[in-house]
Length: 140
Length: 166
View 1 (spheres, one colour):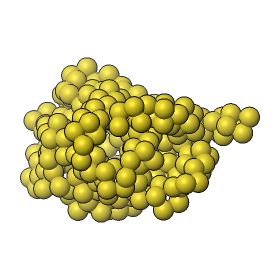
View 2 (cartoon, rainbow over the protein chains, first blue to last red):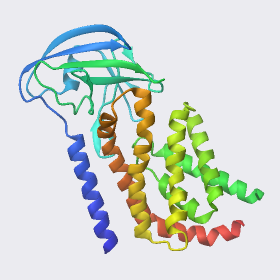
View 3 (cartoon, rainbow over the protein chains, first blue to last red):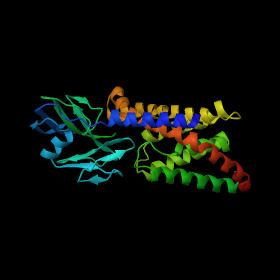
View 4 (cartoon, chains in turn cyan, orange):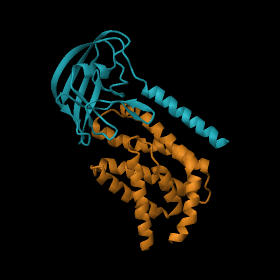
């Protein structure tokens, strides 16, 4: 009995974790964000894009850039199908235009107004006039 | 060390690696904690550490990195299991206690990677922790549930079969 109760509590916490951390963020207004692509220290491009209410960062990027995601096995997936990682569903950005991570010793860091983001393309909360940088970084 | 025992360790390490790879598409959901806990409760402390060392080396080779930055926290993290078992549970096993130990280990394992990840990627420790927290919770609860339900029957199987192997 005790074991079943503890199991139910654990499953509830797992579900809440999924709901809290896996919730997709959709813009709650129309606006514009600036997307900056950076290879290491070199700025490759800087463009401003309009977004509409209900857009996610993934929507914005996929509409304006050629992007690649990682699949379940961390291999390149050009269709960017969302992947469920335990309780959390989302996408991992593996490449955008000419910036491409090989996964093993490079990665693309998402920065929101110059600060490393703590969420990915499906969960990152952004608002009008934000600057989102996608930086190809090398693991040293 | 007896040849039989070396062969047994090889099989057990292979099982550890295979289940990890089979479940690798779900980050932090695995039976590694459960299996290492079983090893810790069935073999000597030094033997378990040796098995963990071999496991970490093979895992790092297979994943293509062989990177000390990953290997050190990994070895330290898994070594917490035999250390914790021998400190707190040897001779007084309690499934609930072990399950809560596995729960705590999920967080400790994540924290151990933090300084190395921060050093490597340059992200702030707070940003790293925030991003890693959901995965620590998943690993902690996965450890908790697997130990709670599977440790007692697996331990029984180990106890009845290990003497036959020698």
